[in-house]
Length: 170
Image (cartoon, rainbow, N blue to C red; front, side, top):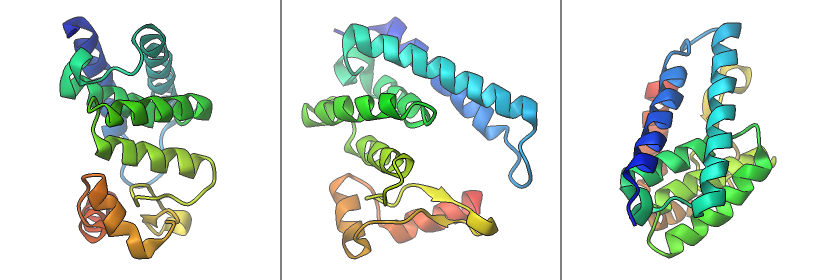
């Protein structure tokens, strides 16, 4: 049963999420007021998605179409301040992917995000950081099979992703 209002609210929240992130300075410190807005948006979006999940379960393709399901994933992806919530979303998203209600690529990104937030190596090579000012992927488990895992999740070769990430953020 498609819910247009729910889909539209998820898309609106995704747009707010992206607006605050795109307003961050590329280099240099993030101003306090912008950091506060970032935290406010993420906290508000997490609380909203938590309510949605309590009411509907994971908002999959049938409920909010592909765009809405992608927006729900993005809100979960950016809920770094609440690792328990991200873990809950990971379980629900895995089930949604198994039922054809969410994209395997979204699951790959959330797997990596949760693992990084737990202090473990990532699996798909989607998460980057810049220790000592050097932009690079966070540690990756079993790098030899990385592209095989990425292909299984519908992601392209890591070399292409790495090039894109460095061009965009590095």
